Image (cartoon, rainbow, N blue to C red; front, side, top):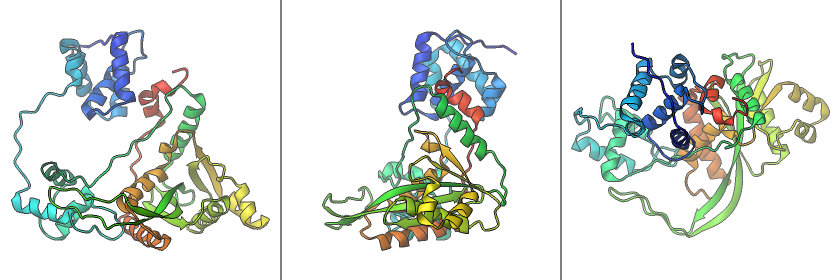
Length: 374
C-alpha cells in the first residue's frame, strides 16, 4: 500500500484554516480541509493518525487516502472542488405528486408549528396516502424549481482565541453528555429565550406557487414574554413554561417544576448557561429555607462556558421551537402558551431525541485552535 505523506506550506495551512473557521462551504470541502490539516507532517501542524481521524470524522480509511492522493497528484484546488457526478438518477416525484407537495406547503401548518418543514411535509404526504414512502430530501428537491423555501438556517458562534477556561468547561460538559441513561441520575438541559408579542397592523399575504409569503412591516408591539425550556436528551422528553418575566424567582419556580417531574431521581444533573439569575441563592429568595435547601440538594449544576451556549442541548430544542412554532407574529401570552404546549405535546409524543455525537476527542481535533498548548 502506498503511503502518502502530507507537507503543507504556510499559505496552504492559512487557506484550510480559513475554510474551517468561517464561510459557507460544502461538506466535502470541510471534510477535505480537516483531513489535510490533521494529516500534515510539516512544521505548521501536529499530525493525527488516520485511525483517530477516521473515528472522529466518521469516514473510512480509504476516503482519507483518496484525499491525500488527490492532493499530492492534483494539488489543493482539486481536492477542495468536488467533481460533478456522471450518474443519472430516475425522477421520484412526478407532476401530480409535485402539485400536491406545493399545495400542501401553501396550506396552514399543523397546530403547534409556525410553518411546514421538509420532514413534516414528508410525514403528511404518507398520512394522506399520496405516496407509500418519501424522504424529506426528495421533498426538498421540488422546492428548488418552485422557489419555495419554508426553512431557515441559524449558525452558532464559538470563541476565536485560545482559552484554557473555555476548553476546560467545554470538556466538563462533554463528559456529562457521555454518561449512560440512568433514571436515578437523569441529565437535564435547561435554557431560556425571550419572545416578543406582536400584533400585525395589516394581514399578511399567504404563500402561493411561485411566490413567497409576504408580511407588511406595520405591526403593534404588545410586550415580551420569557420561555423556559428543559429537556432530557436521552429520554426524548421536554418541559416548556411561558412566563411574563425572567427574574431569579421565575427561574427558581421553574427549577422546582423540573424537580417535580423527577420525584424518584436521587440526583438531577442540570446543564445550563452561567447567568447571574441561575444561582442557588434564588431558591432562598423564592422559598423558605427548608424548601430551598431540599431543592438545592436535588441538583448538580453544570455550567456551559462563556461563548459556549451551543454546548447546551436545551438551546437546540429552543431553536426547533422557534423555527417550527414561534417564527411568526403572536399577539398574546395566552396564544403563545397554547401554541407552545401543542408543539411540546407533539414532540414528546414522537419521543424526539437529540443524537449528540460531539466528544472531547472530537473537540481536540476539530477545535484544536481553541486549546492553548495543543
